[in-house]
Length: 451
Image (cartoon, rainbow, N blue to C red; front, top):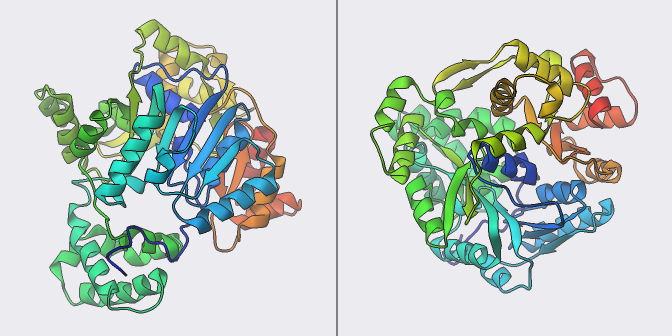
């Protein structure tokens, strides 16, 4: 691979959907941390940097017809695919741009209420990262939110030698990035078996065989063969974002907003002695062995008082992300198992089993409702969604037509602004009204209610 190439460009990235990039999800992050979300009572604007094949952008545009959506990606192949899917699905409020971040900065774009980028920031060199930040600085509206996720340190420290070796070895292999990674993965497997200590300490090297079963080959090519691959410390990212006037809001990994969910008491006591917020967050990542961050920043965000925060949370709409009978009312975190099996949590699930509702529809003590809803959302049981449904039938039909259900993740878009991932054969059977198997019957029933 030439040293002049700044990204993996010889193979397309996987098709993916990231729910944390949605307006309602980011609004929830802002609200729970005491900040006002962007005003979406009129039209709003949203942009994804490094949009890949455009599935996330397309789903959110289709389910938010009042918004103006844009996707930016340097790979023409990605953008052509994204445009084709959006055209087939009849999504008219979405524009894709086949440009790098520096060229996109000069486009005549709206001031965005949301700018999002998933995983990209740790895959690009400093020149591209500077362009990334300049784009945000020019196009983010006052009060707007930025989502930037990235491989994080110190959690990736044990895997740095693995990635370095894989990248170095790939230079001596032939074929495209997928073929080169496959070849060096086998060689690393042999080195691991032979007792290479640095590889045996690597989580990725140790679990690579299992991961290759779960993920498509293109994922590994883009993840480990990116020329500028470099996990980041939160203090580095906060400093860079602060230089363009952005303020830390919270984490789109919802449970990470609550010390009581992810930190043991000894860790909380130790962090209480650190006054500087950036140093505290950096130190917190050491306790959590943080490997991936989903940071949310804001430009001059308005602060909420406690009463307004409570009112906004109670008015927020949520949906179930799994059948009610499958909910376990607990989650495993870095601090152990967090349990929330109580009548209020079960009431929330029961009410949402009939479809998306505002939290206040559960009619219980406001503080109990909020506490349990945030626990359920942090565990992935429920998710914030749009207040109004959209017609997504054409998009769902297009997704099944475009994606290869045997090789790619397949998504079912919900009318209220998000999507769920399924095996393709389940969605095809549902479309064709064929039996789906007893284990999937609860999901069939859930989708019949959610749309």
